[in-house]
Image (cartoon, rainbow, N blue to C red; front, side, top):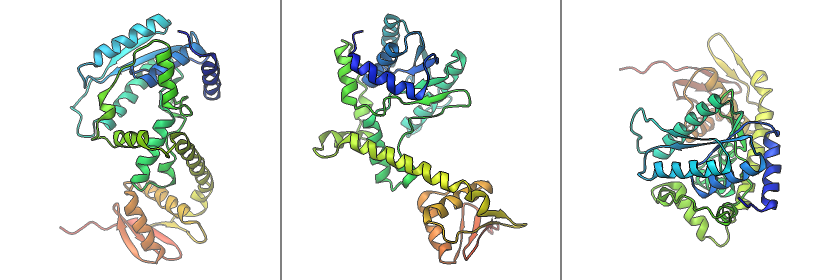
Length: 317
């Protein structure tokens, strides 16, 4: 395939930041333009170090043919390919996208371990990052949620998940595939208005002022801020939380509110309590900052100069 040298050089530099040359890499390829661009760029930048996999969820009649198309392209590129047919232990519920994503990552991880691949790359790009930030903003997310998608994270103890295209616009990826003479898969579910992401995507495309690249840059800045807050939190976990015989005690004095919130979350985890919903946690934080007592996620929280967390007494029948 004839790819623009500038695009290959840019991608190779992005990839070098994530994994050193000589690393065995897996690429998740659905057949859409984003993942096909990822396949083409990775095969060009790291020849002989790449394998590809297509997860066929079996939710659309066309999925098997699309996987076969990817397999044929991989053969031309000299990239080993496997089609992984998803075996749904139970039919997906109304949240098909989330369940499909979780299943896909599990199957890709198993494949990577079997093939001794150190990392799996997916084709998330700047437009995806912008869509994620806007969706979470609409749901009232805080700094952590607005930070968007990480460029890399652990998929498991053995495998890293990486997203080398987060700095790339979708339009550039589509053009790259078209210029290579490849017809990409058109998945109609990407335009289904019942999905939040589809509606956000349509709005972004029609907006003459919202720039996905700048929005994605804001998401990256918020991710950096979230990591900085976690860094500041780390020493407080031992200096501001202590166990008494009957309670977990937090010393909140002079701390910024966000650090208080995260200390509360850490205390819930320490006591094995379910993580409360964001709005519920904020209401509880408001109450104990005023010295009140509340019950949340099976715990009794008592405010004051020191906050006490104990198991709440069982409710009477």
